[in-house]
Length: 267
Image (cartoon, rainbow, N blue to C red):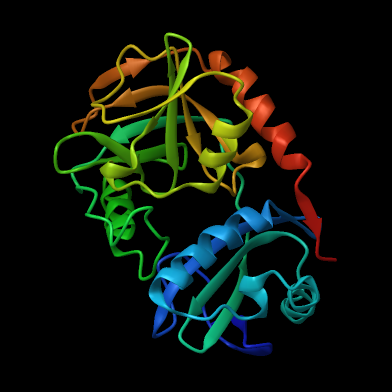
């Protein structure tokens, strides 16, 4: 078992996906590259929104005390990886795991695991992450590689989000994002894309967007926060949509530049 920093003390723990300490309530994952955390405040703002709604007091890490973050990172002894902050009643736990290489272009695969109803809207990122974990298990069972992301739909058949990612697409020059009513998370990278896209934005309840000009997956641990999609297959692996990933480059570049300006050194 690895170690985590719990309430400022290094203890045995596990920061791998799907594993949470007893009593965990809310969590955030943040990319750490060369000792710099990417868009930390966006993650903490989402985390604090959940804590406030649940009546939980944020500790120094959730508040954004950079001295506390630097102390915790020194204990964990790393400059690169995925930081995961888990906050519950009376505890904060920060873990660090490896940041694995990511494909530049992804394929999507529709999943049968229905996106569950949110506890409240906007949806918090809460542990134990059971519905997303079930979607990830379904995707792995299909035997696909790391370059394939699974897509969940709500009970009405509308696109919600990926098992680990938010989704967005361009259609007729308009940036489309799934509506909150589909059960999607208020993704941090998705919110950043909306702010920097420089084009109209529409929140929509939609089936697979077969007329999309470009599709993106957004995940805060991806380089630049997003990647293009080349193909979308149905639950049986039959193609539903395909496109040129190059069509997404202007949006990817705008998002990467926006995020690069919002890195905080924790070294």
